[in-house]
Length: 143
Image (cartoon, rainbow, N blue to C red; front, side):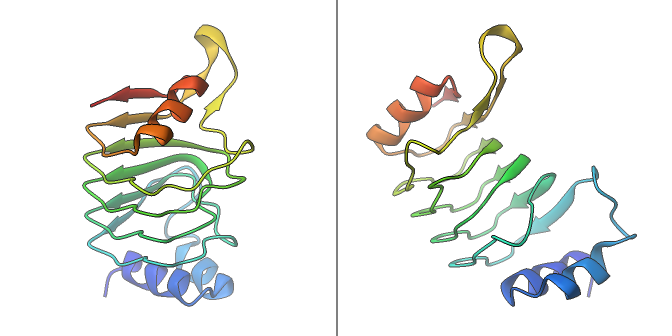
């Protein structure tokens, strides 16, 4: 079993000590942690800062407390995910974000003007209202 399988199991079990034992020093902060073909549906990520997490072909439906920067999603299902109160920079491509929950605290852009750091959603499925919400913040969306 590779290390990301152990990390995924620890996250699903909400076991931060096991996660930390497996991750460090094998994957130091600032290096991307790649999850491929993992099922994180319904997982609460509250204990796990997800900066430099990459999800490819993963299921994150109904997950919550996804936060950090940057977080990468490719060809994944992120339906009905709860982003209420979340601050994150997301790079997403070919993902389904329909049913996304958000509120006035949800923030996907840091800063303003040309110096802003913006989330990007490329070829992703979004509800009309969520797309408008993200565009008002200045998120880059290309459908």
